[in-house]
Amino acid sequence: MEEEIEELRRLHQFYLYRDYKTGEIAKYLKVSKRTIQRWLKGKNRPNIKKLRKIRKYLEKKREL
Image (cartoon, rainbow, N blue to C red; front, side, top):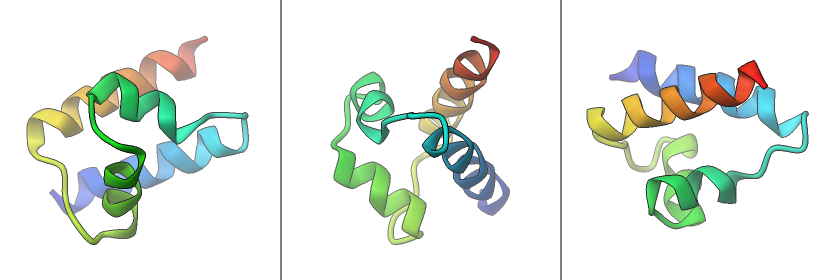
C-alpha cells in the first residue's frame, strides 16, 4: 500500500508541473480535493480500488 501512495505522489508531482489540477482527479474519483490532499500528505489512505483507478487515470493522462 505504501508503494502505491508513493507512486501516486510521483505521478501527482509530474502533473503539477504540467498544469495538472488536483480537482480533475477528485472529480473523476467523486471525492473532494481535500480528500486527495489528505492522501498525498499521508493523513489518510485511499483503498486499493481507488488507487487502481487513480493509476489508470494518471497513466492515461500521461499518454496525451
